[in-house]
Image (cartoon, rainbow, N blue to C red; front, side):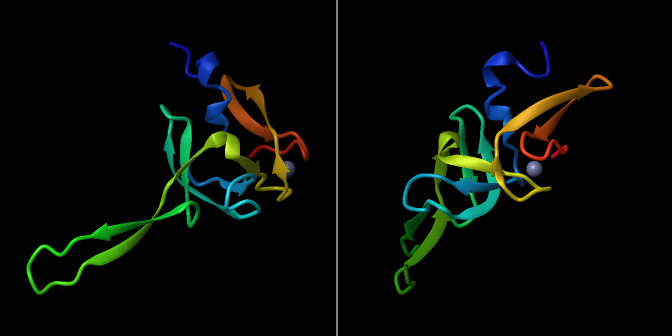
Length: 112
Ligand SMILES: [Zn+2]
């Protein structure tokens, strides 16, 4: 199997740890870091984005319930990758060198 199957190439442009700009929804305009990539669903979990409140019921009588805030997944079409080099929201290109594939920024042409 090739390391980069054609049908997933669009998705693989975004990786855990990347900084992205949210381009739609209630968190539009925010920039944050990717915490998790859900490749099957083509979704990502971004730090502080799409926050969901989870109510935890008390386990014992006398204990208080808790509310935990966790970021929910967003579809990758709702974000744009921010280039590490030029800091702009960009489209990702690829360069192949020495049998390896690298992501490059289409704006500044730097490897990212
Ligand atoms: Zn760039």
